[in-house]
Picture (cartoon, each protein chain N blue to C red):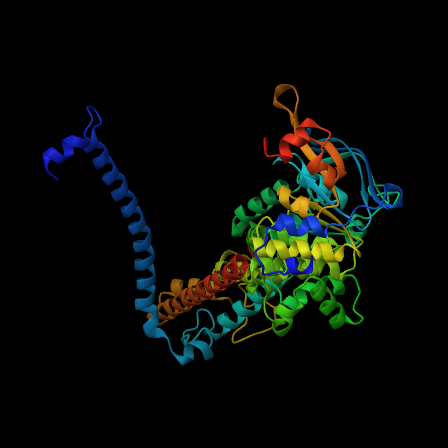
Length: 299
Length: 287
């Protein structure tokens, strides 16, 4: 731009140059912050992938950890940890999801206006409790004076999951247009039929998304097994009444052991855990996009 | 008369309906459905509507007209207790339905809404198939015998059967706006209510679709009683037997509320209104 052109638009004291510079500066800082975030994730995932991916083998999924401090045999797989995590997270999900959904239905469909913020606040508080505190609480509640049990891990994980499921379900229920509820109520349908027949079918995809994300989030929780279920028998075990090995705890133990083969196995476990969370999150996003499309069509 | 009434023709709508509306029977032969006395509707501490008293008669179309913000929608939503869903809503005065106070202790709002159906401003079909849209209410209310026949009858009455019969299993969201609104009417009449409330049912529709909805009201009023809110005066003039004109009153400190100015036969409201404000409104001088 020539100086003659600029002078047409220029006003005295408008400090155009300075404003432009500040704008560029702010943009740069924001760009840098975003790049930092992506870089941290990239380095972390890349590092785990580099060390873990090469360790992937069939043995990892079919053989179990060796006994702790064993000098005669080395750990060759994490089958016991995968099975334990699957069982315990599965039980936790089965407990947390129905209760979480019911809480959300109460808050968004039935609760008086004065109750809603109270429940929301409580959910936020529960979501903010550190996992170790929840674990100690469950320990004091059911394990003191009894043996360790995998179920205790499930209870703790369920408590951690609950607010996430409830909050995400509340958010998705808020997306259902009120006109649909009015349509159903205007026909003389009671509240519960409206909720069950019109509101919930609309939101199944979204509720599933919230659930799946909550599962992804808690599958790496280490505090509950660390406090509640670490005296585990060898080999693959399915019975949650007994203490069961879990993936995060196995990673912790193997990483601490110092043997190169154990460390390698820990990386493999970490890689599988990250991949699991990635796949689960991506499928959750896909479900979410699908259910948003469905909801959008109804307006 | 018949040659003027073909749906696709582009004749002056006003001409068409003037001829269609039958003269009102004498008042003493009219059966009262709603007897509303001194109705006041409040949101929180603010009045939206004050001092409304009127009677709605059976098998007539009663139109509620008036400028935006005069409480038309609030009024019609009082009639089936839809406002109960608004947390801050309060109501004073009584609404009697065939002599029974609809807000008396022990009256279930669900039962009220079952008897007094409603069609909303924007078409709001369920995101289900066309068939299920009509069938859902029937199933919920236990009217499952002859479900297919009931659905067909409702769709026929709502003048949608011919367009929809080959695609009953497809999503209702694939219908045009006008078809969706007729589906909502079919859904409402399928459960056989006594009264159908319509809150600006054609305001989101094009003129052809509007015309179909109006035809439909005309054809169905022998079986139902209609109360329709509209801000389209021509529409009121075309379809309504009785017309109530609501307007906004202003009080101290910027308080404003809706009130009933005049209620009479549509003919009278539009040709010889007794209140100056009604005259100003229907002649387009205000509003």
